[in-house]
Length: 349
Ligand code: 5GP
Ligand code: MN
Image 1 (cartoon, rainbow, N blue to C red):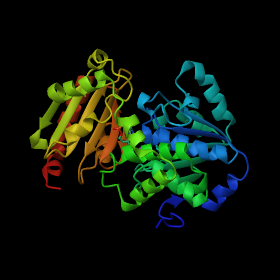
Image 2: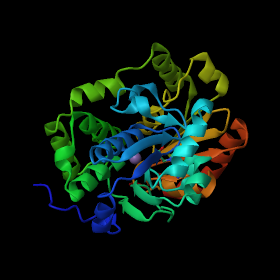
Image 3: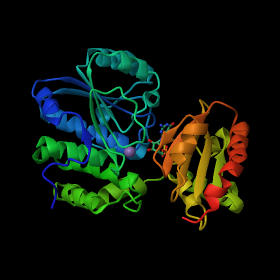
Image 4: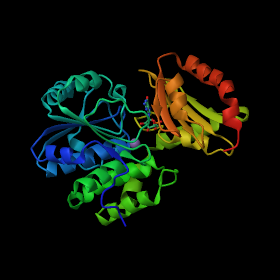
């Protein structure tokens, strides 16, 4: 049912990589700014595997992450690079690492100030990712843009290395969470029969799927749901002539609803859920920068759009970007771009 070796992913030298893992390594695993379930789940699942193989492993993330991820096994030991009290330790661990694994990102600017230190390190670099147009900084790449999630790739990599028997309940739930969220709960086109087979195996290996769904989706604060209500009734703008809907949130509005990291995750999908809408965006004033999430349906590439205009990227139908301009200028820039994409946006899928 499941292939003996998942050869469709590009892995540079699987045998060499396995050989490397046969001697104890000091491993740092890192993932992108504001880790989501796929980023943190893949990092923690991979960390557990490497620990079982006898390596010393630290997961270091560039920033904080949503509290709905704080149940994941191993999460309590995650080091946050931008936390003042942890920064020196994190730097020392990276400097001392013999292997650095970069998971769920492939553009070094996504790890902020950690990028220069990682780039300069002489450690063996490993990248496991499914984003488009990766930078080439890794010695070992396990990369496939068709993969639904980095957690799926981690499962496949563990399988290819022959260590599937080491996957326990905690790891299975981390990997389940990443696949669940990156596929939009198994609804995006990336949800292949093979994804369901991986999911079935994770459940067989102990993942309590109902528990993971509840922990991620049904633990909102009252404020978050009221913010969603406000956004949908007051802040969503629909431009039928461009098959576009967008939401803008100011820093004051976030404050008014006591918004926490992760609170606006998923909001953009409501805008994409309007019939006829092919491009959706949420533009949020995060104070340190304006952060934008893009979603699309069909052939319109938000990866290209975010790359060309908002220093970002991602996947064809889900991408992000940022702007260091003011919120109002960023919104104006976004709206001013639409006419040049009008034909592409309004043509039928
Ligand atoms: P989200 O909108 O949920 O933050 O991100 C959507 C997708 O785009 C995710 O796969 C995420 O990793 C990617 N992404 C988000 N922001 C950026 C960015 O600034 N640069 C790049 N290269 N990818 C991003
Ligand atoms: Mn991902």
